[in-house]
Image (cartoon, rainbow, N blue to C red):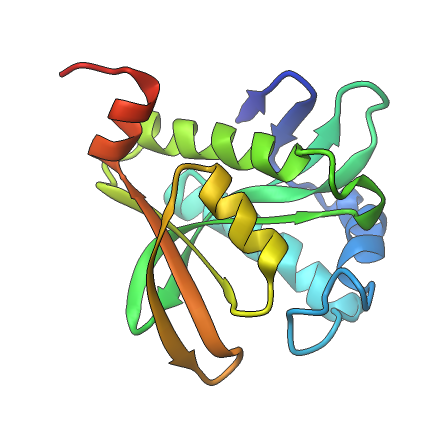
Length: 177
């Protein structure tokens, strides 16, 4: 599986992605909105979890590769997440901090959104984030999503859930059915 955008290639993880992913997920600033940065075992588990998701669901988080340099700069994709007690398809993303503020998360998230509506039967896609994670929230809004709820969350204290429905996506893309 591979998705290509103007500046990015999204591809499945391999165990060889460990070092580049560890640099991102172990960084305190990048992981500010998580309970704590990931250690080596958690990063290895992250890669393994996504490889299992590819086999089970046909999707997961995919490695983000910058076309211009071939550099691994993060991940973006779909996973099933517990969002306020419901297991829902969630678009998630992590981008290396040296590439923040360049629209790469938005570009990747929009490509994943389009792929999901074109290749799955989901009627809606979601993103959720800790209430303090304004960058993730802005990326969700730029992906055509709207905030649909705010809820107490043991991990985040308060989380925001954003969503876009298939019909909203079709209207956004100018698709007539």
